[in-house]
Length: 341
Image 1 (tube, helix red, strand yellow):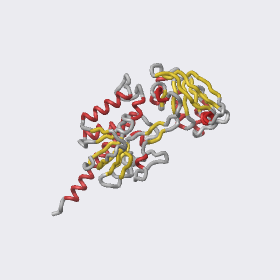
Image 2 (tube, one colour):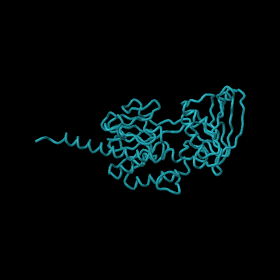
Image 3 (cartoon, one colour):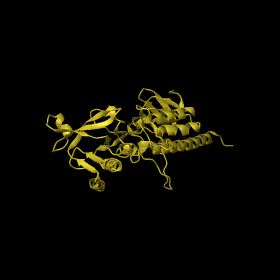
């Protein structure tokens, strides 16, 4: 593959990458999709998706991803295991080095590598993620009508999650390891003033109880009057432990965009690593980045919405923008190669 030049490589096989692959394949761009370390992305951790258009009875996250892959393959997309470790974007064609040692050259690249939710390291979180433990209240909050739920975090995201969950849950308890929130004053006040939202200060989640069949049934919390109880417990300091019955746990401690391979390139990112995409002179959004031939879609460029449906939309945008770029690129190359009379 080293000697070949692809028209388009799509990095990432979540909903954004799959949507881009479907559109690109239907445009005869023969896209190569690099599946990454976690094929399918975060949606594979969601057992039921009820808010994706066209599935009134809901659909499993893994099922939705598999359907998308089959659809892309039907139109000619090729899939390969691998993750981009390094990218030279100022070359023409773009040069990509993969984690498995392969090298790929491509005329255009869609970055749809997503953002990984941060976990807290509580006992049993691996087993229960997607089974009562979630990183997205908008996605899974409606499954917890009448439950008592826990939100872990202290920033704006945690306050937003808590307020959203309060529409469904009987009670929402925000667990924060300090006595001061990182959230903006307005968001913190909204959460404090809500009758269904309560706070546990200087407290951390230590373990989650339940099973894949029963879901989350409870948690073990640790607390210390001076905060950071898990850190103190690890150093031998006595902390208070308490088991609490809850029906759901939501992590809201941030996300990390998977964009490390773009460091040092022309692609502009914010301080957290999210990719900036360009707007036209009219102010309308595009999927273009600051690097020629490089486009971004999905959570990698979206720290706000982070929904499957918005990822699918930006994936299609990226494919359409890439198609236009490649056509313009070819026209310019042909014009340069054609001798004048």
